Every structure is written in C-alpha cells, then in structure tokens.
Image (cartoon, rainbow, N blue to C red):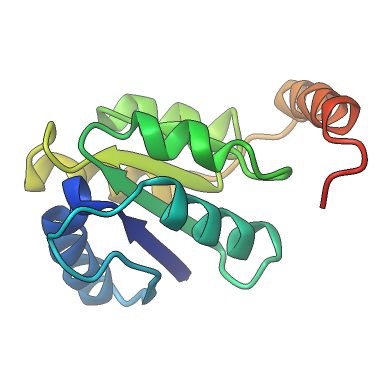
Length: 152
C-alpha cells in the first residue's frame, strides 16, 4: 500500500518508528514532515497529507501529534478527507469498516509503540463494509458540499 505520513513535534518520535514498522510490513511510506523534534504546527502536515490522499496520490494517510486531536480536526477541513482518531484496535476497525477512514490520526505522546503498531495493522487490513455505511458517508459528503461551496 502507498502510505503518506506526517506529524508535528509531538508526534515526531512515534512517526519515525512507525515509518520503519510500516516499511517492514512491505508498505511504501512517504514522509511529509516534520523532520525534527523542534516545534512544528500540526495544521501543516495535516493539510499536506489530507490533500495528497484526497487527490489519490496515496492510498491512505497517517497523522500524529501529541494526542491525535489537532491533526484530526485540521485534516477533516479538507473536503474528501475522512480522518478519525483511533486509540485502540477496535476503534481502528470501526474507522476502516464503517467510516472508510482514509487518514488515521494517532497520539505520539499518549500511545505506546506496540499499541500504535496493532492499531495500524488492524486499520490497514480492515476493508470498508459499504452498504448502510455508504449511505451515511454520502450524507457526510452532502454536508461537506453544502458548507464548502466555492472553496478550493
């Protein structure tokens, strides 16, 4: 799978470990920053990663900050991004199966390395169920269209 990953300073250390883990599983991983532990603003990687996923340059995106919340709400400002915070494997399963999540948000300071690895494995291996969930996502897209008119 072609994955893109990004973080602010709060997720930097975890991002570096995740990249190696994902590459070890055979995924192609592109890093959109940040590239050091110095202070970095979470909206910047959230925008870059979400836009690239929505343009279908990558299959899915992963974002990290201290707890996952900031990158999540920033990513969801990009029309077509379906970013979800997942704090355990069950949440990751629902994010993939029910929300067709294309950007997973994680907490680099609130989650352990092994927990993140398990969450990622579940999310990457769970297919979207479609059916009644597709209808719900169409409603979300209609909301997005209504409130994003005239925006790029």
